[in-house]
Amino acid sequence: MDKFHPNSRIPHKNSKYHKLTEEEIKENKELAKDRIFIEHTNGWIKRFKMLSTKFRNNLFNFAKFAVLLCGFYNIDRA
Image 1 (tube, rainbow, N blue to C red):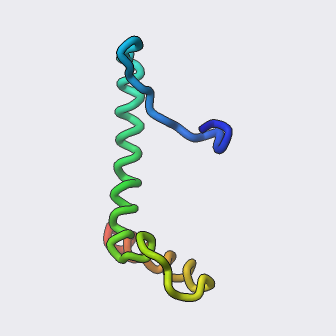
Image 2: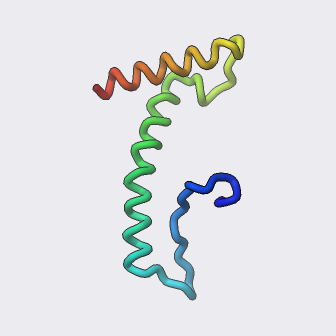
């Protein structure tokens, strides 16, 4: 994953032979706290079916619609 983006973060994995340390568990929880906000945002935007289905309009308008949806989300959260 670091090849694609240097700032990417992935959780530590637990296995039968290598148990997670307390520090790794704490890092995974911090990562989960950040991820849940992003997942809720994606789910809210997908309610409009724009990002979850095929976009059947001119691709030139896609960015305009996406910005409009993000604006609705910001108004809803404000």
